[in-house]
Length: 144
Length: 390
Figure (cartoon, rainbow over the protein chains, first blue to last red):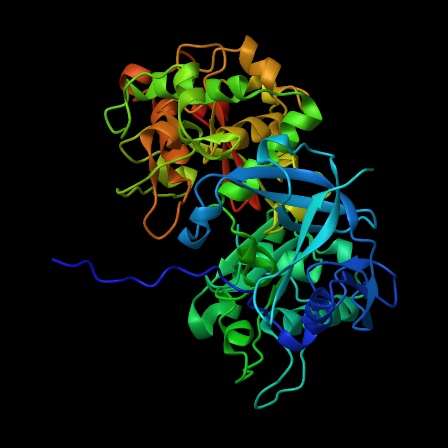
């Protein structure tokens, strides 16, 4: 008896809630640059992208480059991924990164043994071209 | 008490009505009318301390996160189709009349964008940061990721240790051994917890709930009616509700839960202090969450839960019993349409009535129960007591 071939599960690509709104972020990532949404009225950084500033309610929002440098604020080493497509990568690091500008994102910390990752470790953005259309912004250790 | 004349509508917002609104989303449009209503009322963003959203697909936590509203004293969903806004008004009126919150916002909307139907009208599929900025990085299942990160941050910030958090699981299993309803009743040790496999570090398998089948219920009435019925009444003495955001890593301090707001309010309403509580039933999806919420309720100074559990017997025989039926970690998390936290409530009632059988605590007139949703995002704390505690 033969086992039917099951297609290998594929990792989910980003599914934006508002494609036009977050396009500058993904376009920049593709150029291997990191930009963040910023309120033109109160100058606050906004992540994730929104249609209205969550601090001052202005809808006059723009984009600005950020350093890509930050620190691991918190992390977990995933042994049992929610999506089986990630099983081959486990264990891997899923982390909250606080950028030097103060804004937080979540991502993977790569290029290091997961058990060497520490809270407050300095990291810098690195770019993973996961498909012709999408580049994910990940982080790797750097000298402080 | 009647609600007649006890509440008023003071601000409104409304966008133009369009056949569809390409380029916008449900959350974006709701943020806009929230801002309009606040301006109309002459209030500030910070004044809004209550939020009601429409239906089970729209989380108040995500609405709060997106809009920047901080409904720290009340949040709820009302999903009753076309009668939703009237019911929401009635619920809000009851809450402001009772002093639970001061200004409650109701918001609903949809963009009907044909090219983006999920984000316009079915936001449970694509909302907030999840599908765009989280799932591509391979989060662990359910809420595991955020609690694993909170755990690592707590250890970094406060020097707490896994062997300390493991004690919550061990003590609760000791209690579960005496609870005939519990799914897992075999005793475990700290080593068993630390040697169980990682789901996602630092969370061990025995520090995470297991979903189980079953059902649970309670009935509420007035004290006057309660006193005519067959069971000794268990009175609600105080309640506090606090709404955080859906993605707790966006909050300034990942380790502080909304219980830091809800528990003091519940205790203040009850007229008791945390030291008066005889036992605690605290929602326990993970050991780290029990510890963080107990800290935020004030059983010890923030960050010192590790030393507290080392010094405190939290079994049903102990000086401060916690999760006397084994909690969800041992009894199993009733989880059909989602976890309700009702186990902590029903066990509180059982203990206060003195009907908890072999895991009955010695003093049982007054307790505190805490309910948690999200990561952690939605918190409610109640103080319950017998007639002796009224």
